[in-house]
Amino acid sequence: MVTYKVVVTPMAQNSLRRISDRIKLEASAKMAAGVRRAISNTIKSLARFPESHEKEHYLCYDQQIYRRVLQWDYRIIYSINNDKLIVSVVEITHSSRSQETTKRTIKP
Image (cartoon, rainbow, N blue to C red; front, side, top):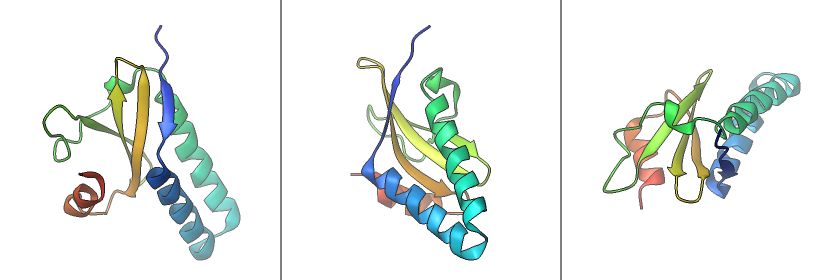
């Protein structure tokens, strides 16, 4: 069975930090830690079968394909480099965030 290396970009790390900070303010530190842990575990799970999740069609262009996996109300957006066996998590967003806003954040 092939195992991919999972890399979390600085943009995705910042998004996770902002999500955690907001939950800490609105709910509790315990809940923020739980959400952060659950998202992190979902990200780690991408090391196996990353192609099993849906494509984010509105983000895909030319040869770049993005996929998403959901953890509660959060979309974890990532790309796969099959040649190097690397999964790159590029963004973590709340599912209520508009596609257009996400597209502006990710597209070059």
